[in-house]
Image (cartoon, rainbow, N blue to C red; front, side, top):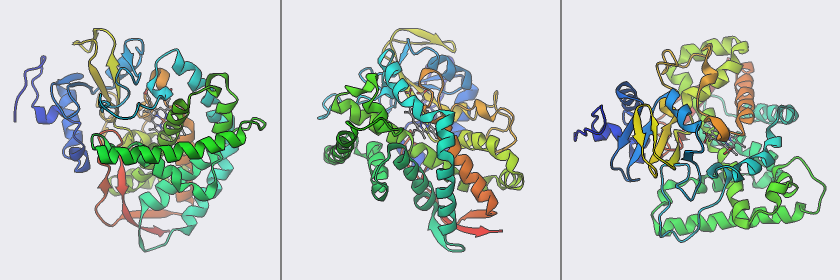
Length: 415
Ligand code: HEM
């Protein structure tokens, strides 16, 4: 192990460089490495990695400090964007402009446009539909036979929800899954052939959504996201690139994340059967259990910022231009905030303090919708006394950004 003496606490590089997708695929000591980092200090400089040098912020308090200063720590795509991956300077295509990767003032207006789709009143409107669809799906699952929970449940439910939000043709809804997976396919980054294919799929998506835009642009305003963008000052004059960027944002934002929390239900039943059993025995624990599940799973492992000027956080000086990676997965296991943080405890009093949705001006706009969908899933599983058992090796996502599963072979039983 090469030891580094960067800053006050020397840590070996193979602990510090937590970004390698292969390590996440194999889940090589990920949680232990974060634990070691937290014990050694809130911020760590990793001098080299396949994504270049970067800071890791690993504690709950210090992630909030970074996110609380969007004037210093930029999300803007032209400064570096929101994930650890840098855009290649020679990339053939321009980056997609989306408001998650914008700073004030553009961010403010574009976020305001889509926010009305996620108000409590909208959630009430959606709930019966979500519940009916979830119930139908659960009732269609085979009992006592092996199937893939990710495909049959997590993907199906989240994709269906997006189709409702966009008022997207129902029979084509799996296209949304394809486009979301394509947008986050990090194996394609840096491989010119795969990258070319990625863009072809992206343009297929753009063509389809442009058609929907054109069909709806002269109609009365409706509560779907496309109609909202058409009728808002801040978004009606978006360039095609901006339109595509914001679509990708909403599709990816609402897809991988909720999907992987739903997949987390299988792993919780396997690893924390006691906590799960208490929640299933007492459905009044479900609302808090939803937050606990989102904390425990943490479907996005990190978000990234770029420092616009020198600034001190947690006793370390971050230099202008430095890449700052905020590891939500580590913050959600921070032992100074969450007791027995590795356990799933549906009664946990401060479960809602998790940082899975981020913090500050970019905090997830779809949080309520995600909580609604996951809550309905848990309630409907509870009513059916469903038990889901993992019967094969889980396949994780090859990424240090999306934290979740590609496949979970399970058998479901009732009663
Ligand atoms: C459990 C599910 C979800 C998780 C864990 C999650 C997580 C996140 C995170 C970490 C951010 C960035 C926060 C930051 O930079 O501070 C974010 C932003 C965002 N999310 Fe979610 N998300 C979830 C569900 C959803 C859903 C269902 C939608 C919409 C359909 C959505 C749409 C968005 C959008 C549009 C943004 C950008 C907000 C902004 O920049 O102002 N998310 N989400």
